[in-house]
Amino acid sequence: MSVEIDRLAQVTDTGEPPYDHPDYVATRLRAPNRPLLLLPDTLADPAGPVFGSDAVSTRDHDLTVQHAGEPLGERIIVTGRVLDGDGRPVRSSLVEIWQANAAGRYAHHVDRHAAPLDPNFTGVGRCVTDDEGWYRFVTVKPGAYPWRNHDNAWRPAHIHFSLFGRAFTERLVTQMYFPGDPLLELDPIYQSIRDPRSRERLISAFDLETTTPEWALGYRFDIVLRGPTPTPLED
Amino acid sequence: MSLPPTPSQTVGPFFSFALVDGFFPNELVPLGTPGAILIRGQVTDSAG
Image 1 (tube, rainbow over the protein chains, first blue to last red):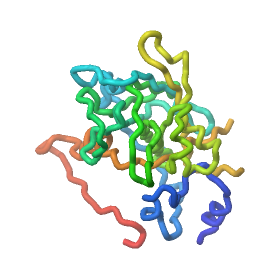
Image 2: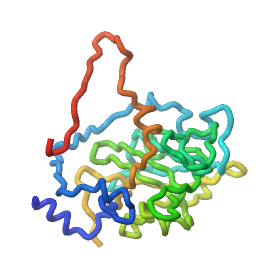
Image 3: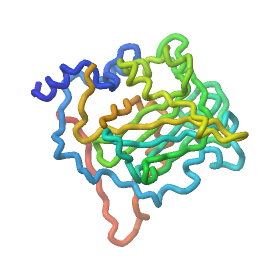
């Protein structure tokens, strides 16, 4: 085991979920059973992946206008800033989301949950951050759904996020949750993050300033990307 | 200022309709485009 891996192994909590979290049953099979290989920073191209904003249409951020009619459910606005570890905005960066509909069903052929599909909702959106790192989506609040991890297992309402950042080392795939959801305490995926402060960073905040009168509630979800040489957090 | 990074979460089983299949096709130019090239390879782990 390298010195670097030894150093990382001594860190009590990086804020990340472990690869193997037995309560989250799927991780028992897919977690690496050999030490990880650390890539030198020189392989992190600072130019990073570039996905042109010309591929993102002006309607892609609004998941409620992608079909002939409006989707059923509670219309919401989800917005926030994408920042680096120094608090600087991550500009012109692609943000993608996907989610279940208001009934807790994905428009995906593998999803067999006995809940209705919504012909007016695909559940996919994308946008590019502005010069201050802001993104904004209009969607409907996703429903909870069962997932057979254990007896009577239900996922809390969540929206998946994919961010490319400015370099491959900033790549982040995560999930945004909603405040006050009683299922959070029971969810092995959310609970796989050991540090409660880290877990709380995945819960959006109800935001009256974002809320549009007579139209939609607003939620704020800021995202901080790791840098090329992330510093593990120590308790 | 040093901000703690946002933790990751599993991509889950239902990502393909959102990311791979739809938005980023593996053909960046139409078939038959003059000068088009094909890039293919194999991704392996450290054990080959």
